[in-house]
Length: 153
Image 1 (spheres, rainbow, N blue to C red):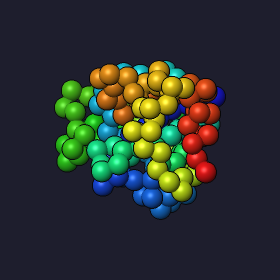
Image 2: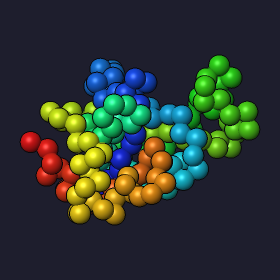
Image 3: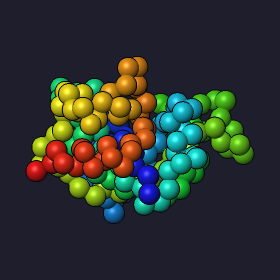
C-alpha cells in the first residue's frame, strides 16, 4: 500500500464536502500537473491511504484521511469546454489528464497545521515541507504516515 497527501482548498472542496458526497466518494479531478498526474497513473492503487490537506486557507494542514477507490481513469473535465479544467489539447482517444476516486475515511478532531509539521524533525524530509513543493498530490512514506498519525488525539 502507498500513502499520499492530496491538497484541496476548503472553500472549493473540503473534507466535509467529501463526507457529504454520495457514498462519501468523489472524483479527484482537475489535476493539471504532469508530475501529479504521473503519481496517479503510475503509483496510486486502490486501497492507498490519503491525508486530506486543506490549502490556501487561514490554517493550512492535514484534516483527515481518505482512501483511493479507483485506478486512474480519464478526467472528462479536460474535454468539457464549459469546465474551468478544460484543456483543448487533450484528446479523448489519448487522454492527457487523469483522475481517481477517493472515499472519506476519517475527519480529525483538530487540524494538524503545516506550522507543526514543518517543526517536527521526523517530518523534515516530507515532500510537503520541501522548498518549492506545491504539488496537489504528493507521496508520503510509511514512516511519515505513522509520525503524522501520532499527532492525532
